[in-house]
Image (tube, rainbow, N blue to C red):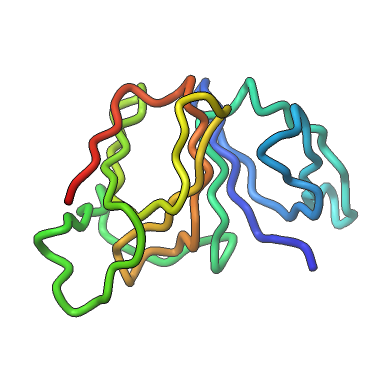
Length: 137
């Protein structure tokens, strides 16, 4: 079953579509997008990306801009499973989430946002696009 994803490139542009072959250990995967009403496959190299956002809906939810980011102190009604992490990207965006497996020797890592209203189900952050990672108890 294809995953709905929003691809954030290092240069700031993004693409929305579907993928069935994303693997964090591979250099490349394919994004299926609509082009003039037809499906088109775009090869995507991880080296060009900031992150891959696995989403509930491709167009997202209407929220005020900028979207206020939830912090760990604001999330009290949710059982948090995983290591608490704040990810600061090189472009200035910061996200709070939970990770089950971080290793600085890998290309990137998955984390799940703590905001229950987020359109993101999970995010694969590319370490070369991350400025800082903070872990919390």
